[in-house]
Amino acid sequence: MQQQPGAKTETLSHKITEESKRICKIVSNNTSNRDSSLNNASIKVSPMLVLEVFKRLSNAGVLALSFFRWTEKQKGFKHVA
Image 1 (cartoon, rainbow, N blue to C red):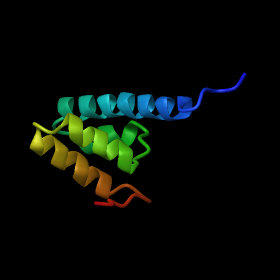
Image 2 (cartoon, rainbow, N blue to C red):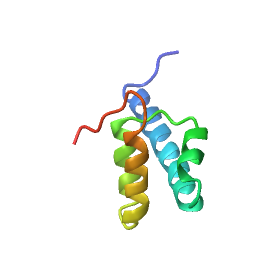
Image 3 (cartoon, rainbow, N blue to C red):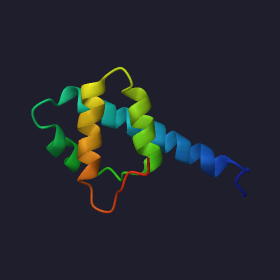
Image 4 (cartoon, helix red, strand yellow):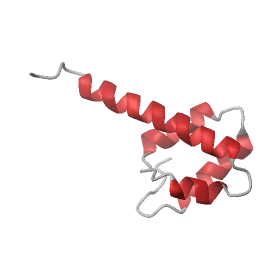
């Protein structure tokens, strides 16, 4: 059975959407141990994921900044913009 063109993109998009929701929940609910909660969540950071999280946290600057700072510490990840 062959996948429809774009099915892979939809699956990736869905994964990023779900992962960004999970990250936002972690960032919003864990004030004192946010970094360790993110570290324990086994998140593979990518530019697309970071962008999606920033979109979701657009009205929560402090939370977005804390996520940004956490991503800076992730091995092998560099911000592109």
